[in-house]
Image 1 (cartoon, rainbow, N blue to C red):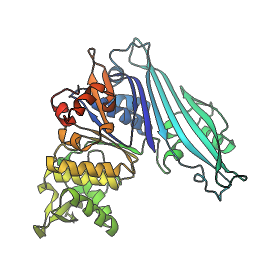
Image 2 (cartoon, rainbow, N blue to C red):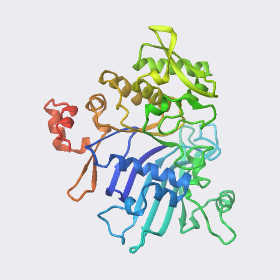
Image 3 (cartoon, helix red, strand yellow):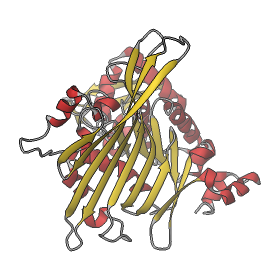
Image 4 (cartoon, helix red, strand yellow):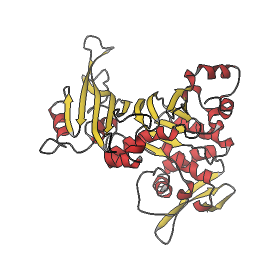
Length: 412
């Protein structure tokens, strides 16, 4: 799964947003420029999938705060997400020995919300998913090539009424419409609808379940926690001890984790879990300086705790899109460059989006990966890729570092 493009209208501080995303993306900008609102787009879609639309709107502060302040109620809130995927329907893209294969080459999800003028209530709710289904067949006459045919399927949910265009086939049609009630109403979101979810990642609850926004709080990660809890890392890292307990039980994973942690903290010798008398656990780190006395997590530095959580999220969590807010927050400048190298390495296998205020981060990233945000005179957030800012490129041609013009405020 890879989010290639994001288009938004009238969401929070974004009057209009059209952004192409790569494997690794770094968002920069002054305080209140819109970085958190950009991240909120992904949170909002994930919450629709998990909590339902009304709860998702409420979690964003309600209609008064989710709708752009400079827009009128005649306009609608729109979100479009363009996703690239090569997941097959029953089989992978064919080899020369296979006769044919059907797989998904792309998916577009569109959401439109409209609110009443006189009250903060939802007037219109519409979703649309566009699936590009591609059939690839072996060319009998040309053993060196493959013949490809594509077809677009549209699935719509307008006010709880499902419809579609294109050739779904009897099986898929039955699966889609079995979620409807006897009167034809559909109580839910297309984000959770088969076949959409199976195309992105099998065995997940919704289209945006493979997306996670992390804003780690090391104070929470240091605390002892019960043995029972979620099997995946929580967004603030509070259940790190439980996640690590399961990871450390596997020797290959344990050895790899320590190797990665040593990249930033060479003095780390091993990690272990301590079981407390009240059936809670916490983790410890043994340093090369004194391997016989591991340090319990409440006594470990905030930066070390955050690095532990980040390495797990980057390399051992199954999320396909990872968003991290200010990962350098408690990290020494000397170690930031090592952390960014790990993040860039992890972006080969999953899409990563960072927000940052750190010049140290900008020293180690590629120019094409940097996205700037600022506010216009009426408060709308404006987004632009650094490589598209010609005036900034002139500064850089004069051997001025991007971290310098960022610190001086020239970027904004």
